[in-house]
Amino acid sequence: MELLASGKRFDIVFLDIRMEGMNGIETAKKLQKQQGDIILVFITGMKDYVFDALDLYAFQYLLKPVDEGKFAEVLERAVREAARKKERRVLFIKSRNLTLDQSEILYIESRAKKVEIHTERQNIEIYAAMDELEGQLGEGFYRCHRAYIVNMDRITEYDSESITLTSGDRVYLTKKKYGEFVKAYMWHLQNGGVSGV
Image (tube, rainbow, N blue to C red; front, side):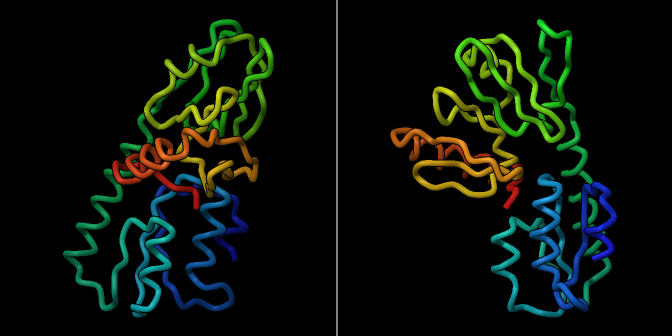
């Protein structure tokens, strides 16, 4: 509870499963909802929760007693992964002389001749073409509808008609793109992307 209440952002979090009050799985779900992009390592004596941890895209699930060498190896890999994620990718908006960290973008929405960029802290309205923005953004973004581009690191849920983001916002997913989207999203997760689930 203190961890969640602190409001601090973390790159890597080590959690036990059995804890007083809220268990580690529930804590992890809430942390991911708050922060989105986080590396979770569970250290526990309970084998029963391994599939719950996998559903949360946990980086590692270590069983107690933990071998020191194994712990050091996992920590080293987690630090490398956190550093890789921190490589700053930016989107430069010429019309506003504004530089945005791509990791903060939730999704981009087309509204007639304007585009609204939805971020964690604000919504920015600019004159721009979706095709142009799609070209500037990295592989971690997907054009799920003619009016929407989503940050795949910010997806918490999807079905054949919509995608839900860490902010709770839902955007349309074109039915004919559903299969392509699922492939792209699974590839993204398997190649270092992060699920906000």
